[in-house]
Length: 233
Length: 208
Image (tube, rainbow over the protein chains, first blue to last red):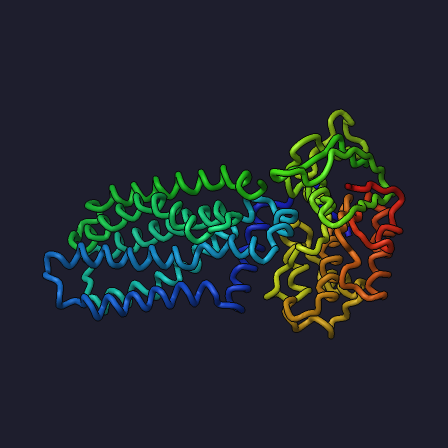
């Protein structure tokens, strides 16, 4: 065997980390269970307590948009912090630090968290739309917002999880750091979802979509620039 | 190749070890001895680049390169192999899946059967592990998997922290073989309290 005398490539390492994360998740189902159970429980609770009939037609778009993003936000908070925290708690972080380029680790874990949150979103949104009678006037805008919003949630949650992974009070610190980081895109996503529910004109919500693209770009770029120091220190 | 420590020390509020200075050449094995709590593991982690020193520095000088300033271990992790009691591999994967995963993230071209052959070389035939997650193997078997992990990429520098821990006599002979192979490839550093581990070393640093 000829051993490499240079750093491994970012992309092969990211693909390997992504595959391992999904395989481990498939076998243990820890994050999947917490994400899906939380999202489903909150959805059922909201559907029973609020339901489509207890909202006036003029309030329905705003309240439904807020409730939908609350479900997605807290699902992300519940399940996505595990990705780095578990590496430190289980003692596998040192092996990964010595083996994989930091950017490959971050990219692989970000892709895995996006896949998890994407699966939850794909499961919960149709249920939410049906149970809450959430009428969407502009489905393409709605889908675009979901994609951008969940990407932002996954990206910010993944990086925050890396930041808190070595701290002693990880859970509390994760919430303290993640909430201010995630509030701006959540506000944008809620407002844009309301627009998608009330306007059939794609251009009416395009500014919000641009805002989310800018947020996702800034957070993801900052995460990749800072991760090396966070991961190796 | 040469591993050099110059007044290397680390403290976490209070001194963990050092300052220590030494130089080890290719083909040599350095033993790190000392009582419990004397900082052996911290020294090895510092040499491997897993933590930063508080004072002094560790440098690796490679053959054929400008000997000027060498490089920091943390900048060349692909040259380093690591085994330690607090190192864990992925418990939900099998031993072979673990090695294949680390092959991929290290940028090694995956060769069918290489991981299995390496596991056999540390005394783990396929029927002992192939269908079991790593977490269900015994502590001694997991220690053997760690030895396979550390040598998977044929590192120039191999750090062994308590390598004989939890191993039976057959396992200890595997440690001896791993150290002997490492002599041909580069440098090994062994931290241990066990005289049998330290007997493999050519020179010794004792921490107090």
